[in-house]
Amino acid sequence: MIAAVAAVVSCSPGEAPAADLPAEAEEVSAGYSGCAPGKVLDFAFFTDFAPVSYGVEDAGGPEGPVVHGGYEADLVDALEAMDGSGLRFRRIPVSEWTDIWLLPAAGVVDIAGGGISILQSRTRDDQGDTVVAFTSGHIQYRQSLLVREGDVQRYASFDHLSGGDRVGASRNTTNEQRLLELTGITGPNGELAAGTRVHTADGVVIADGTSDYAITAAGASGNIKTRTRIEPPLPTQPEVYYEYRESTALDALAAGEINAVVSEAIGNTEAAAAYRGGGVLAVSALDEAVELGGWTLRSGDTALLACLNAKIDYLTDSQRIGFSEWHEDNRVFMERALAWTP
Image 1 (tube, rainbow, N blue to C red):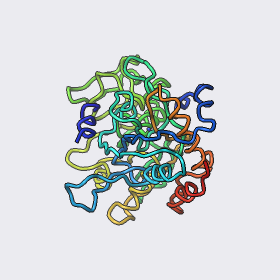
Image 2 (image 1 turned 120 degrees about the horizontal axis):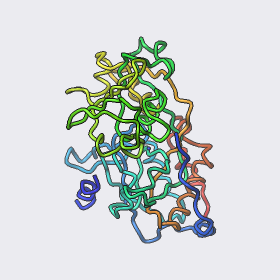
Image 3 (image 1 turned 135 degrees about the horizontal axis):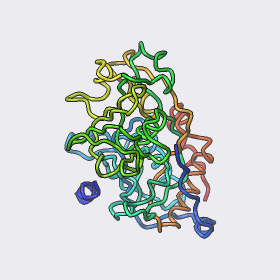
């Protein structure tokens, strides 16, 4: 993943949010207007999470650069427009989700974003060292189920998922983590229940209930990283699918190959409205847990982090302005930026 993104440069509930900034970093932000004067910051953005963060081909043609679009793109634009912010960004499109939050630690980019939920587990590398830090949260997420239009009442709650149901999920996401938690397939630390059968690229692996077989939003044990399907240990629990033969998850859902797709409600709502012109799919169950989304920087970039946080908090009015307000008026961040006085 990191090597792939480096090549590009050269041409996202069950745990507490990342820790607050240390006091010395907060002090740096006092009276600090220019976050990164004289420097263009490389900002890696995920290209496949419309309408929060996505990539669109430039009008220059299919070989042209990919342009950042969506909620986070407008927030970044607003940061650049703030008088005296000293912020300029070079947008780096990233199509691979896994470990995107760790890219700043590798020195590949300065900041990573694109629908990343703030989790302590995502601040650490494989050795358990804290290598990145999250900015202030700028958006709220809630997981949901996308189902066929006629199945909204049948799957009105995550509790309605049962044996025989097939649910689509994405690897290494909070939607996967919450689905597995809510259905009892994993425990509080992500360990798979004993007897769970995990289909992988190398064959079937059977979990023994220990941490040797674990899945969280930050990743999974090495022996199940390439999982394609999960068969739960109890007949009352649903199966989880990650691949759908030659079709997409939405096509598989519409065709009845799976019964639901778990994903963040903003993305699922967008998908329901866009798929075949609407009226085929609908959002049903909504998770009670609320997640905050943010961006990551290298853990040592405390001055830049503090400065960014102060400006993000201003633009979002300390999280009082978020996706709903932006969806109503996508100039809301820019208007606040232009009213800013350093």
